[in-house]
Image (cartoon, rainbow, N blue to C red):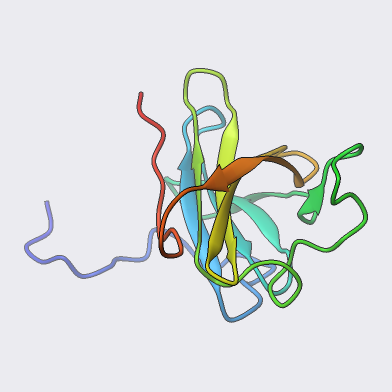
Length: 136
């Protein structure tokens, strides 16, 4: 066990590199990968947690077919700010994300293959949600 809390590289840098100013990071227990995404560029990547290699580039984030927001862009500057969070339910693989705009935060499910987001509803809080976790 390391004697410090310093980050240690587990492998070479992967390509493509992370794009954008604001990125999110979460562990997908179903696929056993790290997921990272960029809110500005809609980048949606899977990274091996053991060696740091890129395992997949998934589709850009988009609202699911039939959603009231279908066809609009869910990236920063359109309908969300950098305050967002993602977690995945290990029991069924459902991904949940919070996205905030103008002080309102909404909860969505996200299709991790296509990037499609489906609105669940408003999160009744007085500030933007900084992080979420699905209870096991």
